[in-house]
Amino acid sequence: MNHGYAPPRVPLQPGQGPAPNQRLEQLLNDLRAEYESEQARSAELETQLARHIQDLELIRQKIYGIETQHNQAKKTYEDEIDRLRRELEARGGPPSQPSHHGPPQPPPPTIGHGQNLFGGIMQGGASQGGPGLAPLPQQEPPQGLPPHMNQPPPSLNAAPGPPQNFSGYPAAPAVNGGYPPQQTASPGGRRAGPRGGPPGPATPQQNTAAPYPPSPQVARPTPSHQPPNSLMAPAQAPLNQTNTLADLDLDQLPDNLKKESNDWFAVFNPSTRRVLDVDLVHNLPHQSVVCCVRFSMDGRFVATGCNRSAEIYDVETGMAVAHLQDGNAQEDGDLYIRSVCFSPNGGYLATGAEDKVIRVWDIATRSIKHTFTGHEQDIYSLDFARNGRLIASGSGDRSVRLWDLDTNQNVVTFHIEDGVTTVAISPDNRLVAAGSLDKSVRVWDINTGQLVVRLEGEDGHKDSVYSVAFSPDGTKLVSGSLDMTIKMWELSTPRMMPGAQPTGKCIRTFRGHKDYVLSVALTPGGDWVMSGSKDRGVQFWDPHTGVAQLMLQGHKNSVISVAPSPNGGLFATGSGDMRARIWRFSRYTGP
Image (cartoon, rainbow, N blue to C red; front, side, top):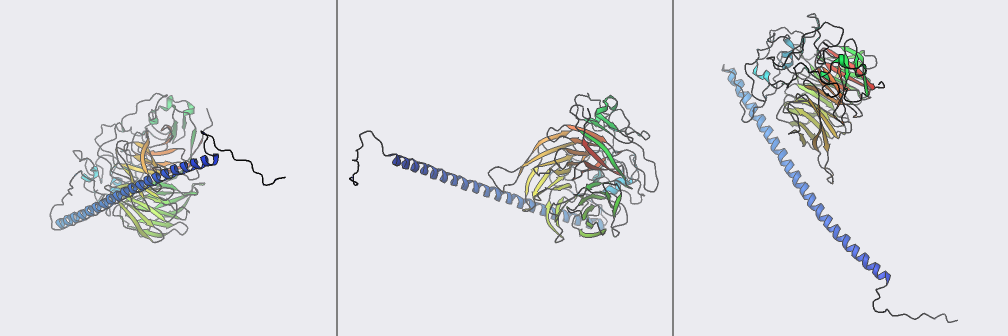
């Protein structure tokens, strides 16, 4: 056997290609070259994109710097004008009105002992020209100038009366006597209002000469015009097509589309399937207007803000468990608590008031743990960050401030062109949003201090924004306005740009209220948008369609504040009728 034998090699014939391994190697080389070419092109595009992002960031920083310089210069000029005006008045000269170049801007409310705006509104009777109220102006003030700025401050000698109903209706009873409560006409249908009380005066028609007084929530300046058709007698809408549920006639509604009790009722939209039911759980009477309501994060307690004090109630029993009042606060005049907010752990309650002071109460000891000062006008809104460390505040002094509980310091201040009416911090503690009298909603990045988006324009609100709230996932924002609408905004981050700031667009407008929208919120799962209005109604809206599910009439005055329980199933309302109420909403199982 010849072990060294090898078969002879056969030479390649003409037309035959290279061996298979050589062909594979050539294909791999071609593929490698193509990959390297695409990789180089991708790197070049990434470099260009990074350069563009850097350019945009530089532009943003320059704009932010210019805005900061502008606000500082504006404040310097305003301080100088105020100093010169005081000097002129001290010399006996007539007080001069501030003049501004460009479009007129409403000056922030001037708050002093005995003459704060809210107190001035509260003093007068329900009739025009009552004590403490100046006569109505003969002509409409310039665009943007609130009506009350053309009026002298309320008389300091006028004895404070009962809280005035903020839509021109009779005042609620005084704490120490006074007139008995009268029931006002409901905006809903032919019924004069909730049953069980004497009929009150009809809702004023639009041709009344009086402009709307401000809402008691913040006593913020309101526009000189009236909302279109907001005070006209409601026309009866067809049962099969309406989103203005106040126009429905109770007598024409079938039983499954209405629910009535002795002092409240609810109507359900006949143009959509009824899926909710509502019931009154607790009635919480107060001795003054209830400016705000808020649940604790565990849903066990609800806090209210009223004149001179904040109250905390047990949600299960409806019993008062804490009365928080600063004994060192000014004693003369009213001192309304405009905003309350629990800390995430439920141990503290922050309150904002007319005296420009934020107080953080230790609920267990009923003592003040922190005091934050720095705002120059009324504090209208507060919100606690979910991390429990930061509090955001909004004020009539045209600023939003962030306060650090660990350091007791004001860590960030955002200045804008007009009074701030409402603030909210996003669930991830990254953003703070604020609504303003200038019809816009601004959103800032808390970490960088930069304005990231301003929600306004053609799809934006047409009047002052009074309330904002983030959705539970932080991707959306709802806002309520004096233009009688609620808007839902989508906050989105551009793709392929990690770390980029969000943009915003209006994705839905909710129309159906008959008057100013004073408060908005979303239920914990984001399933419903809630709103409270000067038309005394609370409405639930489907956030996906913008259709109103129900309207609840449970107060005899403006619904100033609405708040859902974090546990779901409950919500609270606060009103100018000197009552807060806790309600239950649940799945409807009837026909």
